Length: 207
Ligand code: IMP
Image 1 (tube, helix red, strand yellow):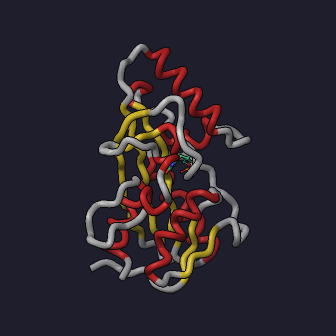
Image 2 (spheres, rainbow, N blue to C red; image 1 turned 120 degrees about the vertical axis):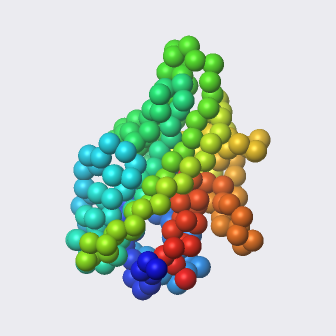
């Protein structure tokens, strides 16, 4: 049986949107979450070649610097017509200015230029938990759907307005926080990639 997460935890992110979602997900478990930003921890360079490696890089750095268990997510949007791009480069496509309007326009333009008729895409979230003594656990959640252009909705963050999850007519940008990443009390599968990875983690590591 694996170790449980209790007490204080560092959320290794400087992304306000992800921090808000992770805090909302952790709230029911009585885990006290401080963020890497609040602790003034430096952001490590994400040099991994996949989501899991980048999540581990962030969680390992935060666990070492704060001497607390650390929790990190690496996530992004993978577009079939673009061979999986922007993928692990999802944040970088928005640039220093975090201009996701421009990043979504680039996806639309490049998907059109690719000549592929596919509008399929999926979000991935890899969650890594690292304890200061070096123990590690990783969970990966995905949600499949279609690209939506023009983007719709002001809720959420990042690429939410240009993604419609399968089985829904609205984009993530048009959904409430509860609908996008709420954990269904009946134990059924959550909707967002991050909430799905979180559900796997909660079953293993949280009470
Ligand atoms: P990173 O995990 O910090 O490298 O950044 C991942 C990037 O992927 C974020 O900045 C967002 O642009 C995008 N992303 C990840 N999860 C979501 C989501 O739930 N909605 C919209 N965009 C997301």
